[in-house]
Length: 221
Image 1 (cartoon, rainbow, N blue to C red):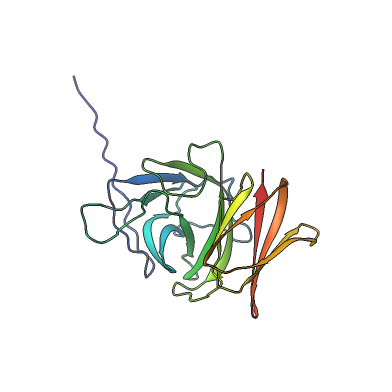
Image 2: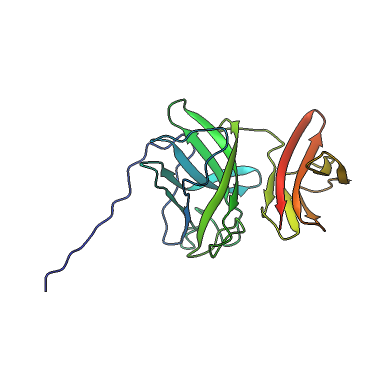
């Protein structure tokens, strides 16, 4: 019987500096629908999304995809255990996001939330994982951003507990409601800290160190 064989060749991408990555057999697919529109930034053909894993403050790319014709799936690649060096995500690693604007040659950090209708939505890498973004927000940065206040908050949305990653010892952490009323305040003593929320709603986590301030919106279901 005649048969049809379809061969899919991954698109050739002119990656931004520092976005080189290794393709492995371990893949976590993440779909970015048009409904997850990026706030304050238009997305055009040629723009790129990348996923990164963190090594004590240094981020390494482990997958990227170019936006084209409104369809986009980012493949996050896992570590190959056959090689001595780490060349991708390990199970449970937090997935960090960046966006590269082709026309202006600018790179942005992205804060994302995940769709709970998909099997994996806590923002971590899983073997054969399948996720979909629900929303995206950006803050402009350079690739070699040495900002000590690059804070990651996950999972978001949450059922009541979140982790802050990238803290500087001595930072002041405030949790406020959307009216600005302070609900909790504490001082960080470690790079990673856990916060607990007793009530559902939308809150703001404000981290202050000297003259630097970072604010993150968190949704508690």
